[in-house]
Amino acid sequence: MDLRRCRRRALSSAFAIGFLVALGAPAATASGPAPYPTPGPTAGRTAGPTAGPTAGPGRGLGAAAHGHDADRPDPGAEVQRPSRRTPLSVPTEQPGRVVYLTFDDGPSASGTPQVLALLAEYGAQATFFMVGSQAQAAPDLVAQVRAAGHAVGNHTYHHPWLTNLSDSGIGQEITSTSRAVGGTSCLRPPGGFVDARVRSVAASLGQSLVMWTVDPQDWRRPGAAAIAGAVLDRATSGSIVLLHDGGRDRSQTVAALRTILATLSARGDVFRTLPQCE
Image 1 (cartoon, rainbow, N blue to C red):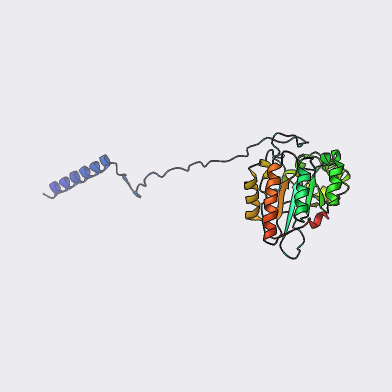
Image 2 (image 1 turned 90 degrees about the horizontal axis):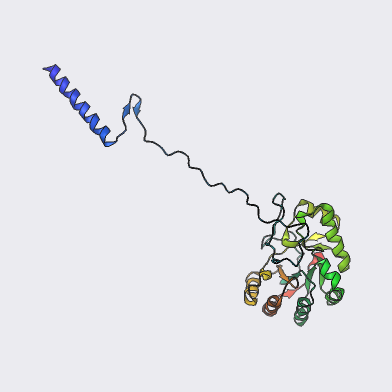
């Protein structure tokens, strides 16, 4: 009797196990229940460096796209770009609300005289970062800028990305421009591209690096209203505003400048030259 009961119990257990296996349940092992399969590691996307177009040693103003992001320096270079709010060099504090207007890529026969006229109308001073080749071709405009009480800075002779040049090439770009404009004490590297070599060569030539804190990207020519709006939204006391008076048609910048000067003057701001460039 006991033997028959044992056989029935064994058959019942075997039937139950077979039923569970048919349903897909994991089988038991001597050391406990077997775990369900766990997914293997999934490979994440690896974003390797993508090499964009690199500029040659000299990148002149005649390039189709003159903007600060049109080309990149050597991908292997240690490059520091300025942010919108943190320049590499901050001007000396002055009392009151002071805004520093700066103009790159001139002088030009069309843009520079219009900018000078507007600055004179509002009693504003500014700093012009001149390209040496442009200045060499228009010494009368350089003289007009200085005679009006504005400061002149160095924006290299051919407008290359300095991080692509040798140390001697960097020095030549700076010294040639300094001679063309009658001397400079401050440098704005084209595109804002700097590395340890650029900083070292500039310092050895007595040039302070000056960047910007407000960039309305007027070189893209997005319209006068967009340029003025970007400046008015961001400019505060001590701001260094980046604009352009040369390189291309700057009619949008000139139109925006009138709005910028009128609006900021109405709120009590004054416009001064950068102390590093005086």
